[in-house]
Image (cartoon, rainbow, N blue to C red; front, top):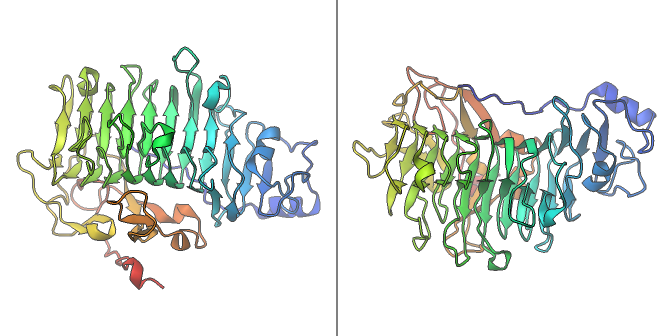
Length: 456
């Protein structure tokens, strides 16, 4: 299979910008559709029409007028504007797009009191919205509950099935009291190229928390690709979560493809399936997870819990290093599944992966690694992850949990170029075969990223 990336990287078209400068579009006279453009900026106003020169103050103003195909460009700067409710839907081929202004990095800061940066389904608002939406290019930090939480349930506990076709891409999510990115009762979801960490540390949220959560999913076109997720924890009495990535309680209704991700130093598993099968888990790097061994299903790099979790899975080309506990743990034997070409702690033939610099979150393989060219081509993605570990600092200051040792370097992250510059792709394979894990190593020498203390 080939994982396709459709990240918007082009600058705002010159003709569009010029037109907006000379002829502002009012909120009452919406732009031609599909494809109207709006803007949000620090210093914007609730009375502005959302043009380049007269921008909105917040994204909710855009949602009030948004139509399928519209895009809002959010300028760089820090916003303490609370929550954005995804009250509208796009249509097939015409997403409602909420993204950074090209080359700039908007920071949404919840101040520790706002609940969720982007949400639909919270407090049972009802179904019918929040589909065909793209969220791209934000730093989201210090929200009391979650960074992004889309989809929920009715008052009788059943989940909605009509949230679909949502893309969450190129975001940094940090220090949320509960979850990082969560989808519930949804289908056709893409979560790619996000840095998610330090979530789930606030017991007042009820926890049940992990970095990337795919709960009660439907259909098979759900993708979690190219993310880096770390320092997620579950401090509640449940002791079940705190995973880097979890697919939870799908009960055979859907499946998720999990490729090219790095999950390291999480409280629970790096990747966890609970009562959820039909998963494709290929070319992921999973490093020293299960930092909280009291978890019910702890001590695991990749975990499978419940009879449906071990059914119709594909597990290939993964690298799992796990000193404490086991690299792979399943509650019962696999059925109709394929496990091949992996290098997993505790399994026959395991060899140390030889990561480039795991003490500075650089999980590329050295050229001498036994994982180079050791994977199989079957089911391998057509690209590999590129992640700049310079986005993370080694620090013990202001950490919610005593064992956390990394934090985002916001000065580094918010340099010109936006979050997207932290992620890139490389063709797979680069050598004579597919590498195990999320990265490809053979090819032109890559300059090392200096440790945080050496960066200018």
